[in-house]
Length: 212
Length: 212
DNA sequence: TAGATTGTTAATCGATTAACAATC
DNA sequence: TAGATTGTTAATCGATTAACAATC
Image 1: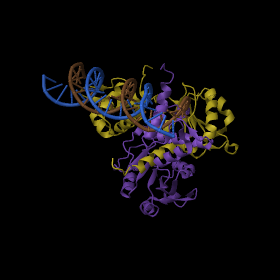
Image 2: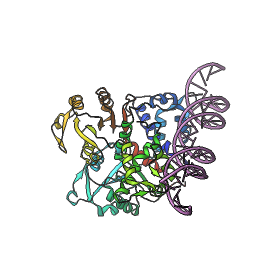
Image 3: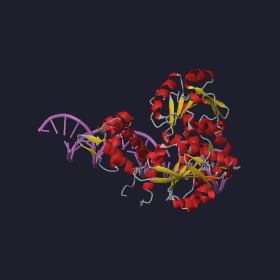
Image 4: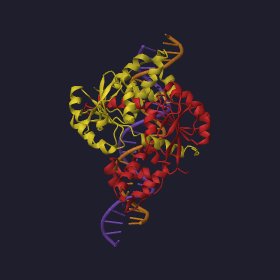
């Protein structure tokens, strides 16, 4: 891959472009200009063109962008053209909710195994996928070419488990625990800190009726 | 409130400061310098001082910051000193997971009611909270001084429901639907787009082994 | 060809970092 | 007092926006 020096800000926006392109595609729109997309997404046309040009010249002067083509190119940039094999660690309420979410599969994220510390639920199945004891993670990862681990366990255990996952060769962790994981540089961590999201909402709520 | 012109970047960091301060407090640490906190959080000491000073001079030269005091001040800034009354709309897997998450309550976010379109589950309870028909939202909001609505419904319905919530006078929406809501300026929307988070992970995974 | 719209450079704006005087 | 560390100003860095030549 030759892409480099892509700022975090651009990466944050990429999935949103992808979502809008998908909607345009589904509604049968074949081409779109940065100006028109700008209007829909409430970002500047200039930013759209800048952002996309970091990855290549996907448009055509006088024409704009071909929706289907751009949609597929962004998919490739995001790595959605390849299948990812996931394991879920922690079959609590949130873990179950994620395991039941079938739409991830459509994007190539396939849940292969579920693991939990609670022996009482071992053998139970969620959407046909068995809940297994933690001891089996290492072998399971090897046998199923797992590259992503979804961590939906309390923060107290998350740090230790993350270390183990790293030692087992995990490539990426989708972390829902309220803790920052300390992993090697080449291990990807994407955090979903729901409580922090709710606090930001609370901040904005407290300051929304202010003259600004 | 006199706070204004606070950049989005700072607001993003605030809950993380709060989390670290909480952990320091719990481990019995009474004071901390920006330098020491910088080391723990992997941000610059300069940024910590800049960020905090947007809200006031919480520190003391030669001493640093008093952990408990700063923790409480940030809580106030985030609006966590006041109780917020929530309703949850959509009692699917994700909605149930959120309804079962008791820790939000500790921060003053109290779930008062749950609503769903599915008549079959009306009357059922999650953590003692009854699932009600959608038609009751308006009256319920009035009776229980609801200020935050949690939206865990499919995107097809989310836009319409959001419009209704706005017309009922909702102040803030915690939106888990994969769609951008178009609400008036004084209505707060905090999005949690899980699929976009997973795509960012995928992007970073695809580009992690690159020489950078 | 004329019109439209990109790709890209230059200008602006904002956020981060560095430095240091103020002060506990 | 001397040492430490903040609060704050100035310098740097990076991201966004504007402008326009290139080109379909």
